[in-house]
Length: 113
Image 1 (tube, rainbow, N blue to C red):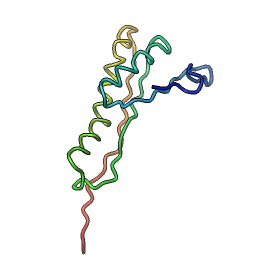
Image 2 (cartoon, one colour; image 1 turned 90 degrees about the vertical axis):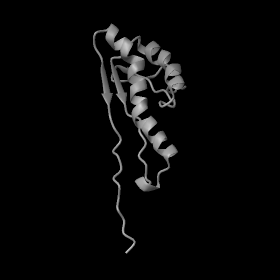
Image 3 (spheres, helix red, strand yellow; image 1 turned 135 degrees about the vertical axis):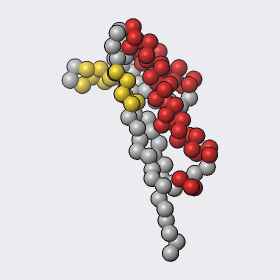
Image 4 (cartoon, rainbow, N blue to C red; image 1 turned 180 degrees about the horizontal axis):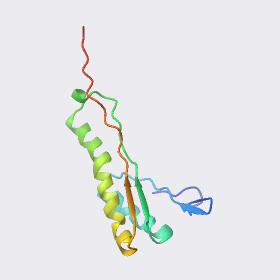
């Protein structure tokens, strides 16, 4: 877990933000950063879920283990992060979890001819 430079987050235009590093597909890692998220400003109003893996492999070349890693980061992380802050949003009667998705690759059919 880390915070930007000074340990107190950054200020830009009078607003505060925090950056934390964690494996967001790991429930224990999300649980570990939740107190820092909530403790930084006392509550979470907006959550931008922007974690994602864009695989450069062709679909038919992926192993099932790689597929699970991609799915966990692109999907499970959004569930885990939203669940982690939902209590704060409900307590304040307002919140906005913003889910962004990595573009999925297309199954490219290649001809050897």
